[in-house]
Length: 195
Image (cartoon, rainbow, N blue to C red; front, side, top):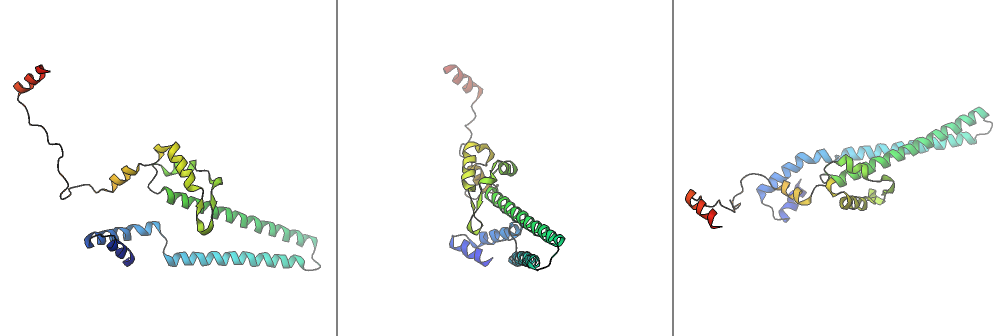
């Protein structure tokens, strides 16, 4: 986390605060990120699985071209080819759905009162996965929802107030409106009748 310490130093934070921030980030970061080695492992497994499917499709195609195949075998090959194509389409749809779900969740993180409700209001058919995994159309839908159904989202000032830690702050001001000096009963009655 040396990179984070350097960024915070450049931003002007004190060393004591930097250590506290880095400790909090170190504690919370694993909940929201995947370690690089795990990501690389899964990425390689995905590439290998895609290559295996491509290789099998080629093998099936070559078998279909072989002369002298019986009609039953040709039908079986056609069935397997259709099943492979259907499985590939299903996998692509599941991957797209997962990508959209994660992108929506990341965009709403801490900004909505009920993330499930807001997620249900987003039209996924209008969302497109662009280059580098960026979701096109998500920001526009969120902006429209904030203007039409603003009660679903947390107020920015409310989020800032939550970031202010409770408790005593040195030089924090004290009581801005001290209570008025208590008046005697006689003074209160006189003030009442003078109105």
